[in-house]
Structure formats: C-alpha cells, structure tokens
Amino acid sequence: MIVHVPDGFIDAPVSLAAGAVAVAGVAVSLRGARRELDDRTAPLAGLTAAFVFAAQMLNFPVASGTSGHLLGGALAAILVGPYAGVLCVSVVLLLQALLFADGGLTALGVNITLMALVTVPVGYGLFRLLLKVLPASRPAASGAAFVAAAVSVPASALAFTLIYAVGGTTDVPIGTVAAAMLGVHLLIGIGEGLITAFAVSSVLAVRPDLVHGARDLIKPVTLRTRRPAAGESAPAPGAPAEPAEGRS
Image 1 (cartoon, rainbow, N blue to C red):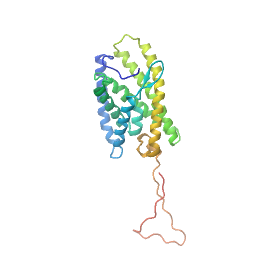
Image 2: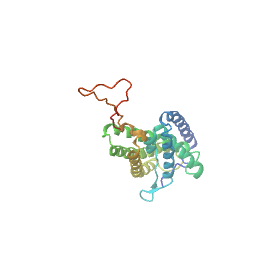
Image 3: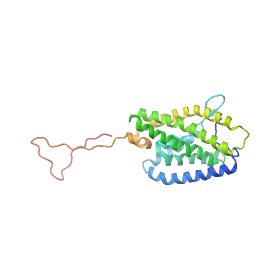
C-alpha cells in the first residue's frame, strides 16, 4: 500500500534536513500566498484543502495488492496558486499526522517535501507550460491538468527514492525501491490526473475566474465606443454613456 512516509523509515539527519526544507518552503509560501488570495479566492483555498484532506483518506486499488490516494499538490496549485497550494497540502499533512497518525511527526518534513514542495511546482509549472501551447479552451485546460497531475506523482516518487538512497533505514536495495515506487506511482498518477482534470473542469464550467492557473483563459472585457452616424450629434459632455460591448 502506498502511504505517507512513517516515523523511522528515514534516519534522523535526513529527516531533520527535510524538516528544514519544509519549514523554509512553508515560510516562503506564507508570503507568496498573500498575493494569490483575497476575499474572493480565500474560501476556495479552504474548500480545496478540505477536498484534498478527504480524498487522501480514500485509497483506490492499483495493482498487485497495492493502492494509492490523491496527493493533491497539482490540483491545489492549479485552483488557488502554487504558494497557497503548498499551504493547503501542508495543513492537510499536519492534521493527518496529528489526528490519524498518518505519517509520523518526525517524518512530517519528509512528507511535506514530497507531497507539497515537489508536486506543486512540478504540477503547476507543467500545467502553465502546456497552456501556452494548447488552445485557450476548457477541454485543453482539463487535459493539461490531467498531464500535470499525472507527472507530479512519479516526480514525488522519484524524490522519495533519492531521499531513501541517502537516509533509508531498511535493508531493501535502492534499485528495488526505485522500481517499485516509480512503477506503481505511474499508475497512481493516472488516477491523480483523472481526479484533477475532473475537478478543474468542473470549476472552470461554473466559475472560471476562480481557477488561478487558468486565469489567462478569461478574456478581458473590451470597451468599444460607437461613432456617431452621419447627421447624428455627439453626446454632450457628462451625458450617460451607451452600454459597453464586451465579452468575458
């Protein structure tokens, strides 16, 4: 079963180093989130964190007796921005460690590094890159969300393999760990991509202005003034303007 990294799986020095990286990442995200969130988008961040929390508690079967769950980094970043996305996933991991012992407190830094600081920049960066080359449409954005989320999962597995190679405490060979982690997480990534694409497409359908990563899809309102026709006098200064034409 693919779960959070437990206590004792990574040695103390590497766990402390990962903890320092996690603290620095969360501190930077706290500053950056101030630019991403406002009174309109802050509620969506709370809903995103709640969705990721609930989705991570549910496991879906993958293969050979293994199962996986949503990581949520790419989804959170696309909906509320990369900085706020890191905060959403980090809060979820902290609550799970405290309330359900899902991943230990000594491994919290490792889990935040893997599931927030890796998946968010990989997923969000790839999503934004794909939007630059794909048509500006909801189906294209949904497809980009699928690919971004699907890639973010094996990227997290690769990062875990590197951490295990440095500080793993078990006798399992690194080659075996790498093959198992990357092989299974490629399949888990497909499930992650499907969930992310569905969620992003659903929000785009009703409130596209709330999807931070796809904000370029919303065309700005353009104002056009109508020139007076022949024989028609121009409106007097201060007169009410005609309704503006535009599209969103």
